Image (cartoon, rainbow, N blue to C red; front, side):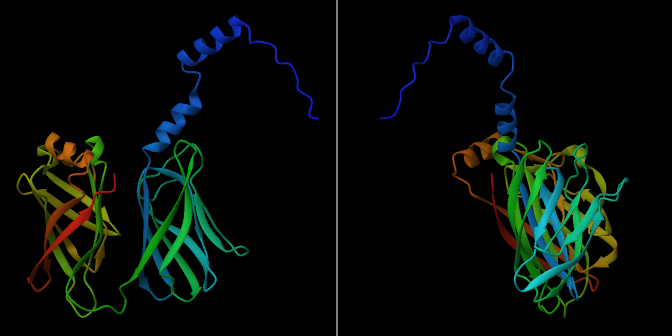
Length: 286
């Protein structure tokens, strides 16, 4: 027969002290969990060269990450493409089990890094991994990988999505590719639908994406144009909340799940001055 132990009642003074501790902010773990709830991370990879993959992180700032190898491929090297900061992060490859990762240190957070890795074996279609966020929590991800080395056809917009729209802090991500067999891209415009506009303070910006410099200008309330002196085959921009303004009506519809996708129109201009218009319905992730 299991012995039952008598539990003395908790003194009233102890109860009052606990209540006072919580009221004064003693529940720090609750605040941390709440903060982690608004963190988001998205990762995708692009095969641009033989046995090399570039991974692009977007979303909340991170302090470290790790990519997992697989049964048909192994990582052999890793390095951060951007941002270039000092001191440089500690990056390494582990053979058993195979993984590759970088660590900027717990006192520094880095937003939207780009990372290049080398590998042997078959080209993976997806890679799993995890990141450590600025509040010390970790989050796992599955990164899809596209191989544009042998693709042909007109320019294409892939991996487009919007975040932060439920909080009135809209952000827009996409990848623009000029496939082999087509001309390199010199410029593009992005036009947003009613309810999503560009901040008047956007003006003219000088952006740097994937090693290519761009000049981007707010053309109208809903359209921005970007051009580069260096023609490119791939770019993965990020338009943040400092550039985008969301109407209260659109935010309300997103919150009530009346709107689940954001229709966006692209005009892509190649070096021969050919214009390709692309329409995408970008998923709204949160």
